Length: 221
Image (cartoon, rainbow, N blue to C red; front, side, top):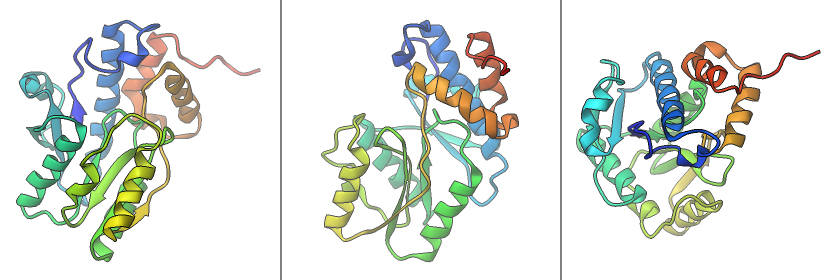
């Protein structure tokens, strides 16, 4: 799921110190890196569900031909996620995984594990916890729209409330390793630390932009 990287509409919590154009550049770089990495994930068909609907021309310039794409539908994040599941499951996909586009390039082992869980279990929801108390990934093998209903978003109990809903519904759930998205300047600095020990080839666009923006880590002694 991706928001078109249009200045003034994405990553606005990076402003200031970044400008709106720079913040949109961060969103674009993260999306490009994620799309490039996921092309090597051959265990699933690849889709981009984008918003807003009128940004199709912008997204066509970004999305590689390996991806099919469609616009998100619905008012609010929960409705949009639920509708993406509905659309893909109507195409007779059984195991569907949604992830955000504003993440450092996600280790493919996390995705492999998500699909292993969904394939091996009965009705199940798999969640990737993010460090801010939400989740960066949600997958399911049966429609479970209730987890998106009556939710508020962007707070530190989104994951906890989702797990409570699943327990009430008596739907099995499993957590993946934690990861993080990029919302604040502190997240950008955390990303720089991540790049020290991860394959930097998976983050070429973002790393290049961080250097341009002055976030390059200072050399050690």
